Length: 115
Length: 115
Image 1 (spheres, rainbow over the protein chains, first blue to last red):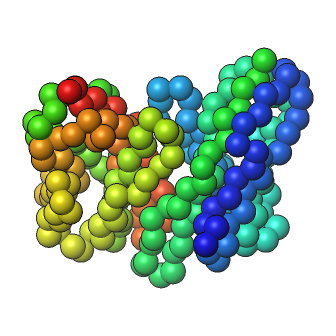
Image 2 (cartoon, each protein chain N blue to C red):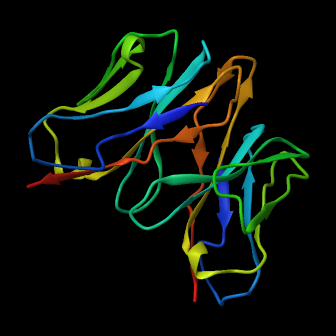
């Protein structure tokens, strides 16, 4: 039972570099999310997806891109890394059918530092 | 739009005291779900409870209890006889069943249990 798997766990980027944070889930969940958590702060929604081929912006989408080509995978792309993107990134998934909503299942997080 | 407010940014109590964490939500939906998560110092997000808007019964799980009051749009969390291991950040979250299923989080309450 893998649940939600994020890679890498840690990464240091230089300003202007690009990278992709990988996220995969094996629970056949339709919803997937990317949140960021700055030091000592709460969770801010970056992007989310309601199913393969459909993505939507959250609260703080600037500087990020996502795609959802399969139900399982929801990668987050940083194109030009900036120090303001130093944060812990959490991927999560949940299932919705009709009026049934499950809780969000979280990955272990990716700690990203931009220097 | 949906919103979750956790007005208490940080709380400190002495071990064995009871403590209540407040959560107030806003939604126009008639069916919705509320959640609580714990984030210990190790950083992972631990799911605690999911509550449907139609189920207003209070819930107790060991030293944890939850008080759901639709009349005041609150879903408060009480820890009885607190222990040092309860020190963590606690997040309240909401998802609507009709308008917008995505899960949004409050800013969290950092709880310090002092020995």
